[in-house]
Amino acid sequence: SGAPELALAMRARPGGHEIRGLPGEESWILVATSQWTDSIRPDAKSRWDKKLVASRMLRSFATLSGCGVGRSVRPAYHWGGVSSITQCISSTFTFDAGACLAFIGDFFLGHGANAALRSASDLAAYLSSRSPLHTSVLPESKDWIPKQVDDFAEDTDSISGAAAATPDHSWP
Image (cartoon, rainbow, N blue to C red; front, side, top):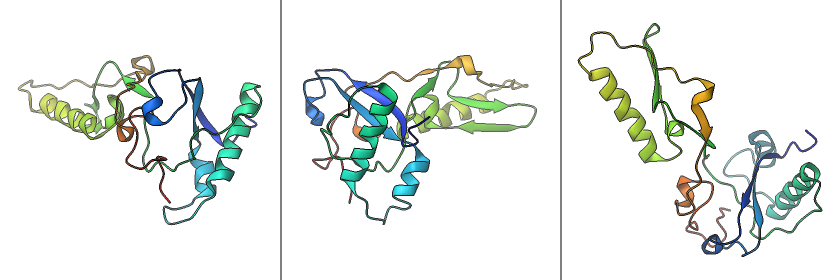
């Protein structure tokens, strides 16, 4: 793609993000690919150069967008988890009756512990129902839609939302 660093670029519309330290003007949230991240910081104990990371991400965005290289408005940070960018509209779990195999996860609903618990709870309720035959619950690709962005979600629950505990959303 010409920009192996960049997995996702999400526009942060002006207004509403000031609490997160973003400017009142349009800005973009850039997310690195896991492969590139692993090459820069192979484990949580490794030190990394935030300025270099920001510079490479900004150049990648410029390459893909055709815009000039912008400026970093927040220091780069290494988010310890992931945030899904899709959600399922047909189910909160999958169940293959023929294989007697089920799968749960927060990503069916968005992201976070509450979503994971709901996924597990819904599967348990489905399997413990008195129905003699449980049919398969297998979402198809058309059942996955872009996750709705909650501008007020906690930083650990969404790719956008309220500020993290540290001023620059960062870890060493």
